[in-house]
Image (cartoon, rainbow, N blue to C red):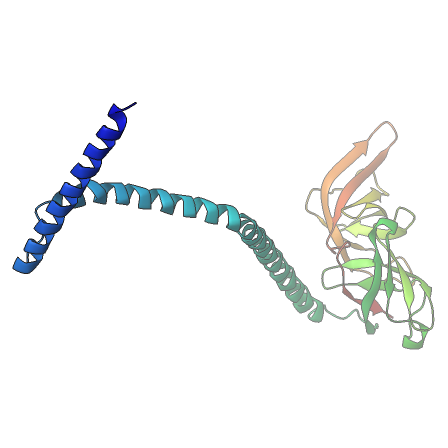
Length: 268
């Protein structure tokens, strides 16, 4: 126990002597305008340590900043995803509008049916699953039940009911609609057309030996008082026959886009 205080005094005296020595060396070097001899040693020992500590602190700050900014990064990523989706919808809408422009061009150039006038109409409501449309014209515009309705491509349907300012159209896709039609051949192959879906109609031929083939154009036959002859309906894409029952029919793809029609003509 007595040796420890003596040892402490020895260390204290040594540190004082070292302090006086380094102070004297530093004052002499300052007077001569030079750095003391031990400055390079201290710098060489402390600079790497300080650099290591600085990098560690920078890494810690970057990590803390990453944690603090994570919600913002997630928000920006979600916003980026929404913008990409908006751009995709915009491109889709532009393509749709270009298609409508092309349809309107064909719509305007639709040749008039001899002895008939046309009434332009907007589709006020569309019910594709029910195979019907509601148009913005009615009796005050001269519209009557049974009149054909066309778009820029082909027959859409027939007026079923007519009010004063609006009317209901039964589309050609309706299974309850029966319409005289024929495949353009020489001679034409006549039959009875009915709907099955928005993309498939059925034409049952009166003559089992009717010479028809895929891609034949199907038009109205003109056997009805209201519906004139020659209005395009669709094209045959499959011919079916049953010799056992003596029947022949074809599947017809409608030319009118029945699920997306927007503007039409009523033929009076």
